[in-house]
Image 1 (cartoon, rainbow, N blue to C red):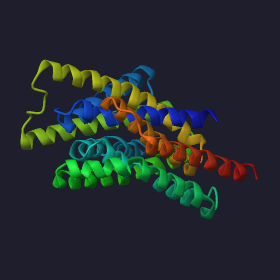
Image 2 (image 1 turned 60 degrees about the vertical axis):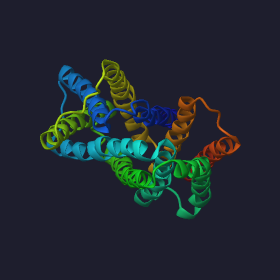
Image 3 (image 1 turned 135 degrees about the horizontal axis):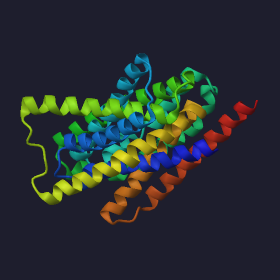
Image 4 (image 1 turned 120 degrees about the horizontal axis):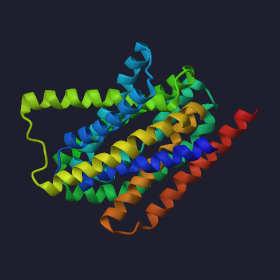
Length: 304
């Protein structure tokens, strides 16, 4: 159970990432991605150098793939989705992640019969749809349609990337028990840093390097947000998530991601200084109940 609670806590931390492009609305998403993963990678590299630990080349190759699908590529698309379409629409689409990952993970591990997942996954889908359905309608009427469509496209891309990361990362850790969770978090952190540095240099050479905030206040906001995202939301959270991914069936690991969506909605209401309505409250209770129900179902098969 400790790994399950750890997974829930991690997703509540990840929900904070949705606030970054919201708080830094005037900052380029590229700079938010750059700041986050340079901090994460620099901390990871320092720990690896101090501990004198490294991994085989094959592990590094997989780390670079996962660094893109789970970190750099995903967060860039998510940040673009939030800025183009808003938190509500981005959270709604990316919120389907628990269902996609649960089905994909169960296809790999065959933890439980798929028929036994119909009820909890349907509850999750229904709860997530209701959670943002009313907000989505309001967003569509108030935002430019072209921007909204671009945002939806970015959110769908983020959904595909993180689904790949969630399943492949869990399978890799389960199959390679010689890799410790912290060491794997550090390797992915370094790989993420290399990617954002190369990516930003390439972008700058083509389009120019005029991406920094125009005011000192904006620069300090970017620095503080980058430190929070890099140290807590990335390095610490990835370490704990690796432990959860290794010790919990993927079909359940995927469903824990509902707490990222739920927490991001809560944070969004806090940022807007508004109270959630009855639909939001019932939807949150529905998805939490669905995860508890799934936990009971999976527990029966593990005990059998």
